[in-house]
Image (cartoon, rainbow over all chains, first blue to last red; front, side):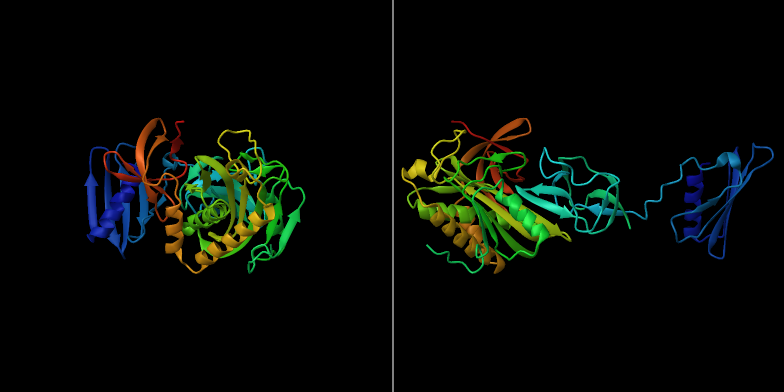
Length: 165
Length: 253
C-alpha cells in the first residue's frame, strides 16, 4: 500500500468518527485506531520477515499527514523541496505582452542574480498599444524569471522570484 | 499665439534637436520631481520611437514632435484605455481645427488617419506603481509640412491643404485640446469621451477584412468596449471582441 493511500485512509477514518478500522489482504494488514482525536495507523507487511511496522499519525483536521517511517527502504522518493517560501513573487498587474527590455535592441532591465532596489523598472507589459513599465516594490536579488521575453501574460501571472533583503 | 492652458506645457523644455522626446521626458520623470503637464518638444527629432522596434521618421523643422508628462494619481490599470481615447481625440481634434473640411479618423486603438493614410503617430508610455498607473508620458508626432515620405501610407497637412501651416500654432492647439480632454478624464466624464472617440472611429459600421492567426474573415466594426477591445460583428451575426494583437487589418488597395 502506498504512503499516500495510507494517508488518505487515515483522513477518511478520522473524519468518519469510528474508533478503529482494520483492513487486511494477502500482503498486509492495516489497523487504524483513533484516540484523543488522532488517527493512528499500524501497517503490518505480512510477507516481509521480520515484519515491518509503519506508524503514521495525522491530526484529522489538517490535510498533511506526517509520516514517521521506520523502514529505511521505504524512504520518500521525492527530493527535498527547495525552500521557496522566503522568496517574493512579483506578479503581472495586467493582461498583455511581457517585455524584458525597453526595445528589441536594448539591454535587459534585469537578469537572474541582479540585486535590485525597490522602484527599479523590471519589465514592460504592453496592452492595446500602451506600454507599461513595471517597477519592483521590493529590494532584493532576482532568483528566477518565469516568463519568456515577448510572450503573453495573464493578470496575476507570476513573473519574477525575488529573494528580499 | 500664446498657449492657453492651466498646466499643460507651462513647463516646456524646447529642444532644437532631440533623439526622442519621450526618452528625454522619461529620463526627467525618473530622476527629478517634474511639474504636472511638463512638455518636451522639438521640431527636429532624429530617433523618434514608434511601437516597439518601429521608428518615427520626420524631416527637420517640418513637423511637430512633443511629449507630455501627466501624473495620474494611481489610475487603475483596468481603465488604462482611456489614455488612448484622450490622446487620439486630442490629435484628431487638432487636425480637424487645422483642416475643417477633412474627415479625420481614429483607427483603433490610436492611429490617426486622413484619407486612409496615417498623419500622426502616438506612443504612450506609462509607469506603474503598486499595480496602478502613477504617471504617463504621452508622445505624439504630427505630420504638418513634410511633403515626401518613405512609406506610401503616410500623409501630411501640407499634402492635403497644399500650404504650410505654422508649427507653433499646431503645437498650441494640440496641447490645449489634450488638457481639455485630460480634465474630462479626471472629472470622470467618460460618456463624452466615449462619444467623441466613437464618432471619429475609422471604418465604424463598415465591413472590414481581418486576419486572425491563419484565418481571414470579414466583419463589421461595431465599436470598442470599456476595456478598449474592438467589437466586431461577424457575418453570422455574432459579435466578438478582440485585443490589439489578436487581429490584423487587411487593406486592399
